[in-house]
Image (tube, rainbow, N blue to C red; front, top):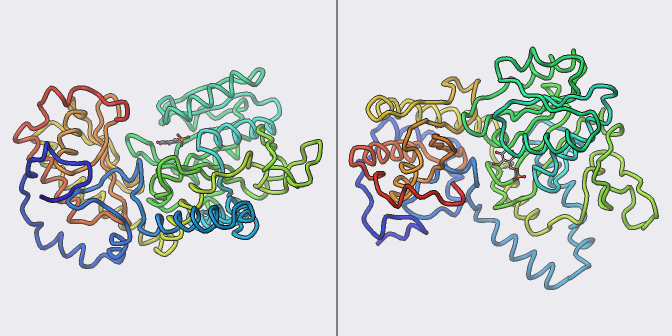
Length: 427
Ligand SMILES: Cc1ncc(COP(=O)(O)O)c(C=O)c1O
């Protein structure tokens, strides 16, 4: 029997799905990025549409980690900080990520988690906004963004958190607004903000904007410099494929760097950590936003994955993200009509990211049934089935087969099982 990793329905055979039609096979044959799929370790027979949540494992990563563990840590021990430039990894990997997001190498550093980076940038940004005391965000931003903003508002005297729905957000930026905090591509619906436009409105009204790029980088064109962005953070484990809990990156535009102070003034953000000076002196530049000792194993796993992505032309990556998600939306049209799915993602790629979400009252159970059939997406409460093709390793045939499988799951009511109604801790 086919080894499909941890997937499958109690050892039962998968639903048979017909071969994709010529037009779909042709799309794969003409795909400039098709060769990247073989550079990832993917379980046979599984169609992985959850790279927007946890990216797949690049085949280069285990060897990179083996070297780091056995030769560097095991062989050179503490000398590795200098000999293998572990100490330079946060800046080095940051400079590589900068190339993916339209930033200068000196504007990005890898550190901590996205949540912690949000905290650091929010507090730092509030610190330079004088009498302005409002953090403005969307009511349904990704939870950690809202929670961190809530925490910062509670911590800083007189600071308040306000929310405005997307349609009213621009108008809500006023003289009290210190910082606007937005996720460029919405984690659930995939709706995309026009970064340049929001930056422009905010700048004219005196507010700073912090962008969360977690669902953008590696999926859509991001041009922080060109769009006038000043501050950003993002996940390393989604489209960047850095691995579970991979460190995050943060961006501070050069012109702001010397003005901003990190509230987590750890020694790795010090100008001279090994001077062991009694008082904190921030490092020049974005390095001041490092805090403690970097997690070298996960940082170097992230580097291996970023190196792989840098081999791809980012314009081709974005074009394929568009084509794959367009195909997904088009192929789902009949399932939407026949089985009660509602597309909650904007249709135009300019208005969305690479993942596509459909509302359905039984989305959780359907997601479990799909996973059992080897099609991996995820569920986001209360009712969204999220499917995220990843340009580097999802093929057009994958998308087509995923929709065929979904149709079969619906026709055979495979989702209607009591065990699929019990929610796991991670959905
Ligand atoms: C928009 C967004 N921000 C942040 C995070 C996660 O942050 P952290 O890595 O700190 O858990 C996610 C995770 O899915 C996310 O979707």
